[in-house]
Length: 454
Image (cartoon, rainbow, N blue to C red; front, side, top):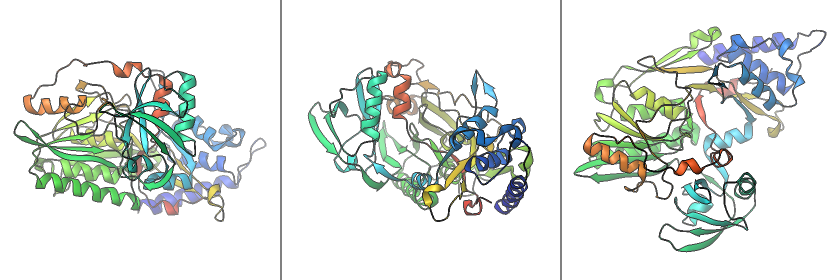
């Protein structure tokens, strides 16, 4: 009944304000007004927001400007607004992103030193994947650009790698050989399990899962099927330990986070609290507690290791935080993004005959807390062992820095405290912004078809 209830309230709210005006401001059929109205109604910190006549959405140039201002009504932590996540996007773009449908070269990029740019991941079905490009390959030249992490060069690389119709790259492979490859963007559906294997680790079988997103086709059901197959494979191989690599996983659907939690959780968690969502005071009836299934746990685990970076966010953090009360959870890598909040993604239909005129808005609407009532990790979940993202080695390589630490811990029960080197210290702010482009979130499925503009 939640979707119907929230719809009736929003329709009444929109209809009421559509008829209102003051001497200085009139509410009308305008995308900027709609973004404000949905945000004012659902925003987790709605009590901090002014009414529409004081806010005056149409005084801003774009809907994106409106949502940027909305975010300034969130609390401030260490000089920064905690809401870095609410967004507005064209509906057609969002539909493709959420389904994993892409038109690009199909790989990620990351600097490991001032002039050493590497492939960080590759989607198998993409142009890069079909050419056999692998994580760890070094980009020696991109068209005529020799990579370095200066602001000017990063801007040029951004254009070449993300906004071009073809590209020629000189690579140095992991074996030291060099190859030149020309790529053209292709339409493909991303596979979000980038690697799965069982590793023999000093007589113990360790399952390794590199999981890149909680999104996917058919509303995430395709990814659910991938996860099922992965854990069936782990169980069939007799795995008794687990390493989950979420280093680039920016989140996605809440139901997939719950599904992964159930696959990992021990039998002792059956029927117990997984997490609780808390909405704003207007929608406190939406507060909801999720519980572990009675079928929880395929591997009979007592501990689990997660690999993380600052790109690990939202549904990824929800998964880690929800399992902490029930398992010995260890985190290796760097602190996560710090996103204990989520949102429904709501369509704003401006023109039913023109898809490009329609948008979605996603104001932060709820915060999640685990069974120990912990959910204030806006500065990220802290790793038990700091370690670099060792982009010089492929996923599943037992000598990759994070996985090596994980396997050592699963053998000895000890995590060394020192960080082994400082690759990430060379990465500039601009480079981080350019080469971490995945935009996900913790997405609440609430029958979005009924969230249509007045």
